[in-house]
Image (cartoon, rainbow, N blue to C red; front, side, top):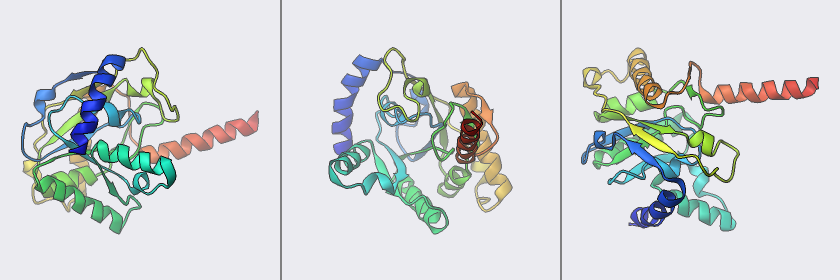
Length: 235
């Protein structure tokens, strides 16, 4: 209920101020479990990604969003709960298995689960290599995957910017459902998981128009920070 209250409050405001747009909404099944696999450009994605869908969209978010203290912590928990985020531990290892179980439970309930295969926001607006967790989940849960591409949110609110820019219309494109039933029962095969993930990322690249980089976003962020630090030392 809280999800729909928040959406009812946000929709008129966001529509009036930012005039968001959407394409391919009909590609998202009206019922039944489905994974929305999206690029991740900005914090603004949490606001605009699911805005046009008549179904509740649940996403998996790091537990840090729900453990803060004071007023900021209260506001953070309220916001992420309001936009359908379920807290998970993203430290890897057993935590990854727990996240997978949580995702499967959500899908077993016939719901819509949103996943960002890149694992983190793009620091430069490019599309980075996807992690194979989305493929494993799609094969184990045996559900279709709808590619979900955000457009212009990086330009409107890049990482580090606390307030979105006005005059930039954010958008979202939903691609046709991807059917991976030919791979069911092969979720332990690493080559299959990589092939499925790459197919999803290719669909996202076509929808978003982003330049694709064949490396993980987290590694690219570290490299960029290191390069910036070295450049600063040379000055």
